[in-house]
Amino acid sequence: MSKKISLIIPCYNEEEAIPIFYEEMKKVMEKMPHQEFELIFIDDGSKDNTLKIIRDYSKEDKRVRYISFSKNYGKEAGMFAGLNAVTGDYAAILDVDLQDPPEKIIEMYEILEKEDYDCVALYTDSHKDYNLIRRSLTNTWYKLIDKISDSKQMPGARDFRLMKRKMVDAILSLKEYNRYTKGIYGYIGFKTKWISYQAPKRSAGTSKFNLRKLIKYAVEGVASSSTTPLIMSAYVGMFFCLVSFLAIIFIILKTIIWGDPATGWPSMACIIIFVGGIQLFFLGIIGLYLSKIYLEVKQRPVYIIKETEKEQ
Ligand code: UDP
Ligand code: MG
Image 1 (cartoon, rainbow, N blue to C red):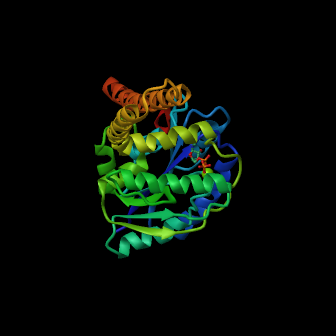
Image 2 (cartoon, rainbow, N blue to C red; image 1 turned 45 degrees about the vertical axis):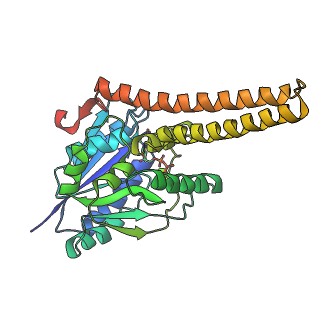
Image 3 (cartoon, rainbow, N blue to C red; image 1 turned 180 degrees about the horizontal axis):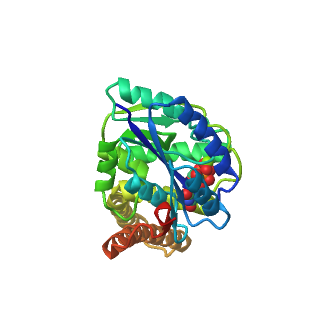
């Protein structure tokens, strides 16, 4: 029986990359003649011609669908919107810049058909497009998240994976507003086969993740998949109690033995500033989680749709 494969492609200002991607994807679809395809492009509030290009494709090619957001909601929102829209037996999310090579779909599909897995995912330990600092910071970050969160995460994992419908339903059953898909994958479980690959350079255009977006994504990753930072303050607090207790004993003994000349104010000032800084730091962490709770209780939609192919 022929299976339907749905592909979700988040796009933000990708007018240069989309035609290259579409041509590549056509070749892949020709190599898989027995499977039905559905390409769902997500226009994440692009300011360039992205929407026009995908609208034109959808008019010519019935396999092409699209969802256009009213503004830029971020890749996470794009992936969620795509998963909400898929109608296939299998679904994959892939970047439009060919850093998630479309031809891998063939191999991934065969694995899912033949072997007993629910999902095939890609990870990379060499990313030609990212400089050494970004690569090593990213790796350290994923290792840290893996340690402190209850969901397993693969260092170097991409968002690119082909999964069965039941996994898509599981992802959609998590209704949270603060979405961190890599953490969600880890949380929902299922049997995943990991394939290593070399991520190529971007096909065209530039990265849509600037430093600000990357930091936001990194903080989001920790805050939405772990509560360890909240507990950390208790440990640091206990440590400082112990240190101050020992210091008090030391000062009492010192006063009894040598008297109490009023020296040591500079060091005292440093200690007060240091401890004050730590308190503010942890207050900030509590604030971070509080803000997440605030956003959750508001129950706003993750994205707002301006247009889809159905309106054409
Ligand atoms: N993207 C998006 N919304 C955003 C930022 C990025 O939909 O706000 C898309 C982008 O068009 C691309 C994918 O997410 O298809 C990955 O982005 P990019 O290649 O710029 O990130 P990088 O590979 O540098 O991490
Ligand atoms: Mg990229």
